[in-house]
Length: 315
Ligand code: FES
Image (cartoon, rainbow, N blue to C red; front, side, top):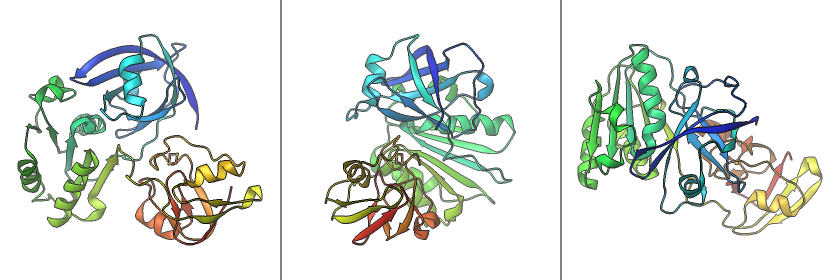
C-alpha cells in the first residue's frame, strides 16, 4: 500500500463522542489520489496502530474528512485520536480503498445507518442526490445529540431519523422499512455488527436477493484465533512451523522468521491476502466474498486458520 503524509487541518465535534477530522497533504499539494463513495483510508497513528475510517468528503473537496467515534472498549485507536490528536499534526494515511462501493444501476438506493455507520452512507447519499438518483437514507441513533452530521441530515429530503428506539421497536422499524423492495433496488447498511445482522436477516426474510445487499464492517469478527493447532508450511520461504491453539497464522509465521505484512489485523482490509497452495483455510475475515472463500485459493492469515491439520501458504 502507498502511504502519504497528511496534516490535520481541522478538528471539530460532529456529535457527542464523535470527532470530525480533516486531513490534507502535509506539503499543501493537491490530493495525490482519488476515491469513490464508500471508500475508507488507513490511518497510521504515532504508536504504530493502523485503523480504518470511512471518508465522507469527495476528492473535489480537496481534503479527507472522516469521523471517529470514541469507543468505550477502544483498542487504542479511537481513544488516542480523541485525546492525542492536535491541529497541524502529521499522520501517515494509506491510499483510499473501497470495499463498500456504491454500484451503478437503475434501481433505487436504500441506505440504512446505525450510529457512526452514517459516515460512508452520507457520502453515498450525497452522490445519489448529485446524480438525481432515487435514494432514501434511514439513520438510527440512540440520541439526537449523538447523531453525527445531524445539522446536514435534518430537514433533508428522503432522510429519515429514528432516534432513541428500544430494541424491539428498532427491530419492528427495520422490518417495516425493509418489507418492500422497489424494482432493482439495492440496500447498503453500515453500523454495529448486531445491527447489520438484523438488517440483513430482515431484508432476506422480506425477499431481498443476497446480491442486492451491501454491508460495511467496522468491527472485527469475534473469534480471531485458531481453536486447534496445525502444521503451517511457508513454501516460498522454505520454513515450517506448528501453529498453536489460540495463535494466529501471522504470529506463527513470525516465530518462523517470516513477516506477513499487516494493516488492520482484523480480516477487513486485505493487506495480508496470501495464496493458499495446499490445505483448507478456515475463513474468519470479512474481506473475501463467499465465492472467493469457497474457492480456497486465498486467505487472510491475520484472522483465518485451517480446517485441517496442514496448511501450505505461498509466503
Ligand atoms: S491485515 Fe487486514 S485483512 Fe489481514
